[in-house]
Amino acid sequence: MFAVLKTGGKQYKVQAGDVLRVEKLNAAAGDTVQFNDVLMVGSTLGAPLVAGACVQATVIEQIKADKVITYVKRRRKHSSQRTRGHRQQLTLLRVTDVLDTGADKTGVKTAVGARTKVEAADAPAPAKAKKPAKDAAEA
Figure 1: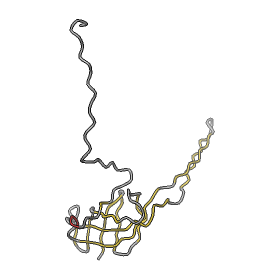
Figure 2: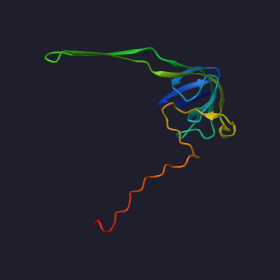
Figure 3: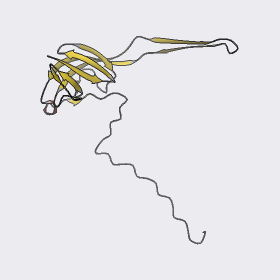
């Protein structure tokens, strides 16, 4: 059975045993993660997501993509050149299971992007500093 999942702003068609390169996730090598944003499982279409469906995968390693070089040259009076390089950080995954129901009962942690803020529910909100009261004599 195959599924279409969404992560990192992209969609991937996967089935058990596939190896994926996705945007970096907060997971170490060997961890098992679960993708709950499943758009399609087999012939079942979601509106927009399939309720209760998930894709489980094992993290193989954190890798970097090939280097992309950008070159800018300005001509005429302001002759300047700039060369920049960028290597996107990726996570290499192996899909282990595609579930069409029971995603909430698996106990596997949800895949979260590396740049996504994860707010702890137990942490108290930071207290705001209070301004000192002005004296009536000064006013």
